[in-house]
Image (cartoon, rainbow, N blue to C red):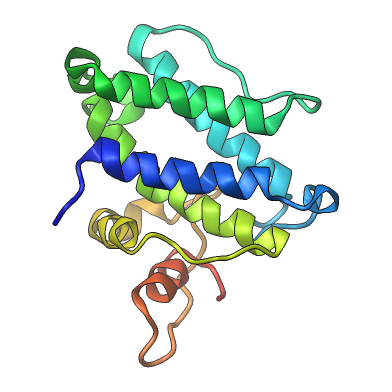
Length: 183
């Protein structure tokens, strides 16, 4: 059975929050699989994208988390705003501007949950020595979204060059390799 966008997002967001809360204190500055980014940078990026999406609903401003900001609290607030927007049918269907691909908010969240929160959850887990398992349905959704966009996602500050997957690699490994991650 296929989950609704709010259900899928809820699972991915909950897992990302767990990774933040369970991050060993001394691991925040450890390098992530994203070149030049630490574990802290990965989390700040995801929070910033969440804030940006919510700001896209009303044209308000947003900012990335500051250096001293509590990332767990910032994540909880940002993900709660997304959940609240998804619960409101009018807001969930609101069309976001060109900056967001002129998509309804709910569709943008589906893509963000798959291509940003999900994948960066793996990056955070890898950087901090936590469980790297991803939600299998979310992996399948990400594959459906990202594979057709192969040429569009290969740009600076986005996804790196594909990595060849070993024969018989599972879906998660194939997705991560497709996005330039070495597993």
